Length: 190
Ligand code: ADP
Image (tube, rainbow, N blue to C red; front, side, top):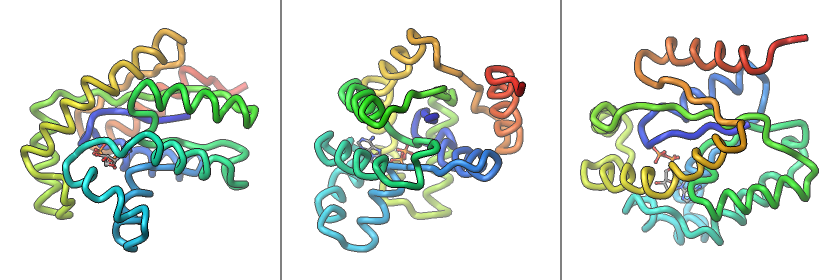
């Protein structure tokens, strides 16, 4: 499965909680890139300008990272992708990777939060974590990119009938409860 949503919607937090509850491994492209930046790897040095500007990391780099990660043994039984695909060419790449590995997506979860609330949350997060891409200009740019580049990905999954949209307004616990309820309704236990 995968989880998507605008920057600041809380998908990283909810992905971690889903992972613990359902016992599936999270693959977060944002986390992978931030780790590389922190560890000063060659990839980290290449991607840092894009992260700090709130731009998407070029598809060639991102796709390679995801392809390598999804070929590892621990995700053979399933995974929860967080932050990928973010545009329609990454969507095509993911289709390709899954087809080669004999996998198929069960569900794409989308968290929805209005823009004003997102900006408020990210500015608050900036004071807590000091994420270098949480400044107001960069936040607005990331939001614009989400609307332009990533919403078409959600539409594509919707057309395929696998999009599960969940209201991302409210407390962490409320949102997690809604997510579990939506997943249970879509995948009733035998
Ligand atoms: P957010 O959703 O709050 O922006 P993420 O941790 O998902 O946070 O992503 C942080 C940054 O990492 C993005 O702004 C972008 O620069 C980079 N990134 C993450 N995932 C992708 C992706 N699939 N394609 C390109 N860049 C990505």
